[in-house]
Length: 334
Image (cartoon, rainbow, N blue to C red; front, side, top):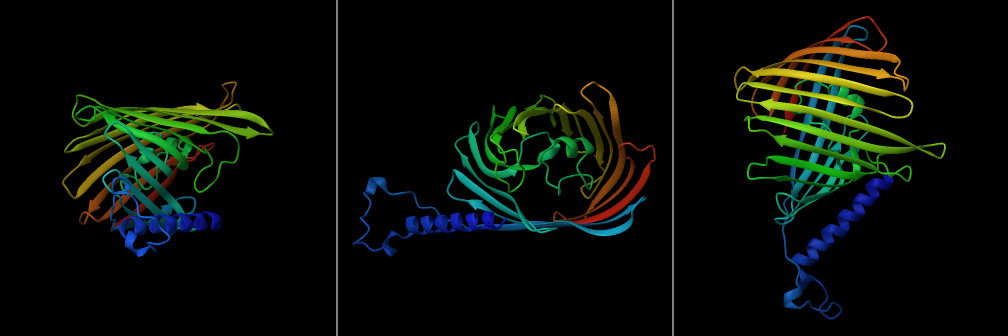
């Protein structure tokens, strides 16, 4: 972690120095620094970073664990543009141990072809790339938590085709080690997603893949994950569902979630969701499954503050007992 911050500080210092040089060449010694030819001068850009963030807190009652007040997320972001073809974002997460969650730059060539470099959410599944401020429930769906690897360090190509962005894609190469970690082996992970916006207004279908490899006692172990789903969003009704499957040489799993909701008015929306995950051995023997039914609603005080309420029935993996959980939370964005 210390090395990462030192490296980030060094890069930032070099970057700021480079911008300062491009913007104010007269500040440098004209005797020791040869003036650049007029046709070779670098474009001058100015940048005023935007500071933003969000805080998510909640109160939970879990049947098997009692009650607890929680600070789920405290995130600060710095983002901006350096010219018309480059933007950047640095996001720090402070809930728990402080860490860098996002740190990337994007080179934007055109609608169809762009490049993202750094640490960011991997482009796997529809729900995996939704911010916690955009989720209907407090947590990701169970299949997403099981299969989606979260953020990683790498490089990705992304873009869209057609006047109305009929097809959107993102595909990249990543360390496969997770947040703020160098590659722990000699293998890379390949992750991608395609979204097709159908002729039905507000409806899109998607397909994702995550092809990875790890090392176990010197041997290469492959693990593959796949997902297919759809989303729909109209003035009132909204829905999202995905089926995920995959595994490695020791076990495999599959899961599905389905969410259906309605926007009662601009301030209030309600939803219901079902989650299911099942694990199996390579021989196809059943291991255990997890089921969850969640219902909730959100009330928006304004476009920056909203409150969430939810009720969940959860049957944990390997248990026949159903736990009843209730929660309320507040999200503040700035």
